Length: 267
Image 1 (tube, rainbow, N blue to C red):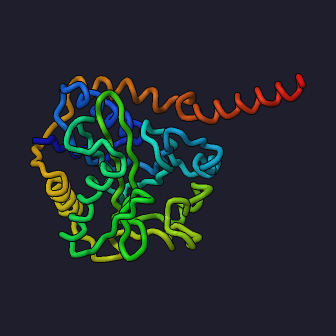
Image 2: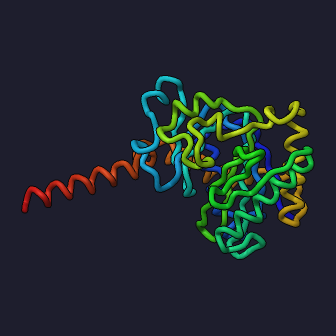
Image 3: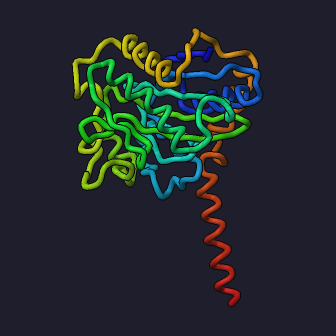
């Protein structure tokens, strides 16, 4: 059986630390494979591991409007999140039931979201080119993947409601992972509240949990974060809130530019 954990509202940095910690313990075989749900306590921009913040983010807007910028350990693009999204992390063993092939892993995990949408009376579409789920041509779920310490982690968002205008202000390229020919987040994305009268959040969580069980072919039990997972998560939170981690790719880029200038000067 897989473990199911719903932390509800937590800090963005802690969320990254938590799914990394759980992934570490799952990979070692210490913890059961896990489906994790959470929501962010305040608006948070998750930045992909390989991205430069200066290329992707309007930092001044984030500072002015208290948007946390958190670099995750997973790849993929930026994800703007607020309290009106259910965020999930599917954390399995690298040699377990989630395929090792990256595209097949996305396909299996995102089939769970398609099942959840069907159970809500909606028809979704998997767009593997963008690693997302679309409804009526607009994205309702974006996803990212990573593998470390013997685990595979696929994270995603499920939009209940959404602040489209803020996303346009936070990101320099807000439509990058949307369908072509859209110029704003509002044109390319859709929330559940756009499609139906919102059920209670607990009902939606249960529908999503059932979707993961059916799509993964597993049963889940109500689990808790272990003491070891919590200790490592607290340690990692300090990393995720550090300037060196947040701007690590920007610093590397600046060093490369400086080296090229020095070489050019020497010539």
